[in-house]
Image 1 (cartoon, rainbow, N blue to C red):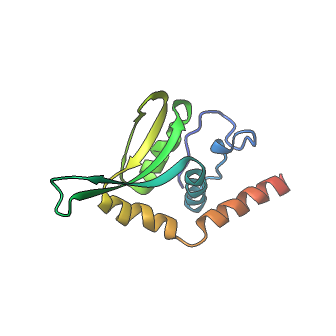
Image 2 (image 1 turned 135 degrees about the vertical axis):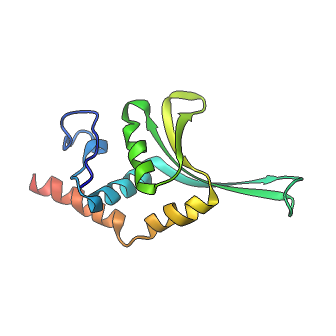
Image 3 (image 1 turned 45 degrees about the vertical axis):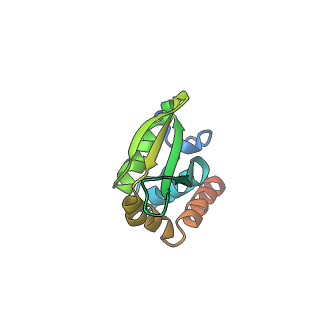
Length: 134
């Protein structure tokens, strides 16, 4: 069982959805999928390059942003995906970012994670059940 570190003692506090987590691996995957939906992005930069064979370089990037006070979530993302790095976001010292910029890692770890069936849907169901029954 994976236990998420918390910035507060009240992990199920409904006032802070970033701290809501029920503890097992399936819930963790749903949590991460939902979290990334709100705080992350995929981007691709295409730049002209005289050194590239076709004259262009293509650089994919997967990022998740978070305020430094909740940066522990980024470390959880890094552990779940098994790749990438965490750094301060340029121009905003109070914000950190989890980045995966190696094409091989994006193809091997990140994309397959999001291709898992119904992870985000299961996460939404979980939150709905929590609000209905608690």
